[in-house]
Image (tube, rainbow, N blue to C red; front, side, top):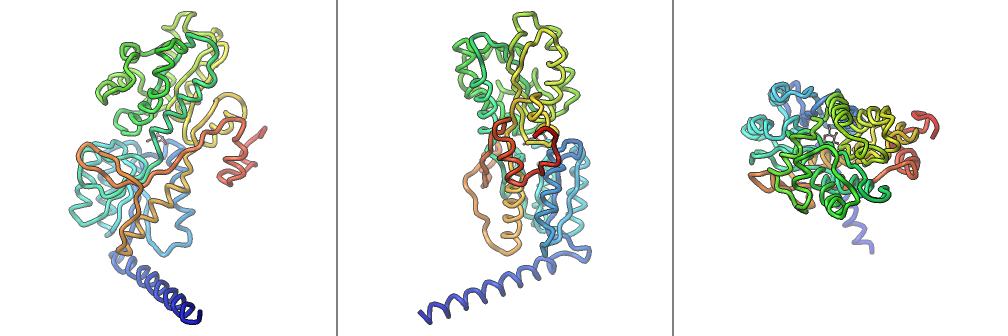
Length: 370
Ligand code: GAL
């Protein structure tokens, strides 16, 4: 008994010494203006990424590690400059959610050339081998959850289905659409739904599995580019073109919360639309209010606290000379990238309080009518 306690004490002392050394190492390895972990996020214009910034700040409040967060404002050129700025600050690890997954290749190649470890955050960087790790949610499951929600709420047959998607420059947009198609396609084939706004999707409606090129053709018609204004314009155009048979009680696949609110606002003002179910994603505060108010049907909650924890955990492992733990891999068109993946949670009016308030993600005082 005694000797095992001695061993435990010894192990505690050794691991504390390792942590202290690692902490010294991280600031020591940085240059005088020293930043050990650089974080690049795509845009402040979408609340989703402002959430991530806040969660990084919360997670790092008591940390020894020096970090800097820069936003690329929807521009690959800004993103490249941001990466260069961080390389000049002497970073050892780069955590990056790219604006454009393919265009980011040259930035991460520059980082790799300087011996920096690259962690793709939420969005995969494609067609390059200059990427070490990927932290992500299960994006195919996001799309499946959205599609499944529409299926569970569809009444009768020939329910008009309006499809919308994210930006083609974002690998996730394909994964979300793939997931939605996995579950919706059989229900289009059996006549539950009728596609209302995409001739490319209609042409492919008997194909249970789509190639990336086929999905690209559909996305070319229904993309919002993640931009609520583009979503509004497309929704208005679709409703103007739709006859009475494509109105009434309808289903809308909206890829995320920003576009869901925009599209819902358009559909709710059409007098021939009697009811709609619309999906979302990200649990943005404004969409939680929309769900409470019955204006958005659901959202897919991606707990950003977990993603931040995973990304920083990996970064700290790298700084400490350890190999980060991964749970699988994603092929980025060039290599299999080791990845850590997190599950998602479907939220609608029935569980909104439990999942988002009781879990302390938001405070009840941030909403009305809860
Ligand atoms: C995706 C991300 C979503 C959503 C969208 C628009 O890549 O996974 O959570 O925010 O971009 O920015």
